[in-house]
Length: 106
Image (cartoon, rainbow, N blue to C red; front, side, top):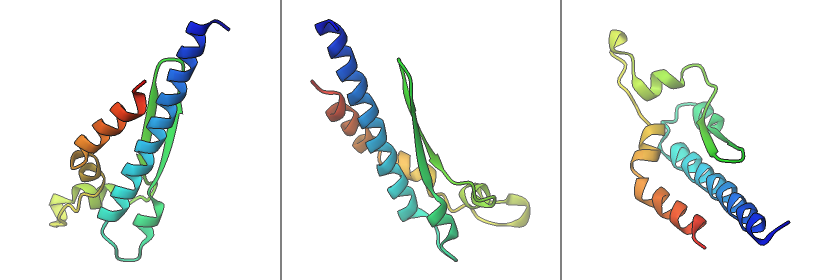
């Protein structure tokens, strides 16, 4: 393997490590913001990451069927939104940006 290929591989590893750190961070932030009645919603929030040659992605969420109603509310039933996932990202944009800068720096 050439030196150039080694450096590309190191960059991919940094990218994968960084996306995993961000996913864990956002998952924790979402759990802190999730409203709690039984704790089921909070416990169900998880993350998954995927990486290929050119990209890395993080998926943070839950498979609880009522989660969208909590996040967005239900206007027809006067159920107010109690966002927890969007604020976990939006209120931490600077921190996430810093994590990317730090994780991808040489």
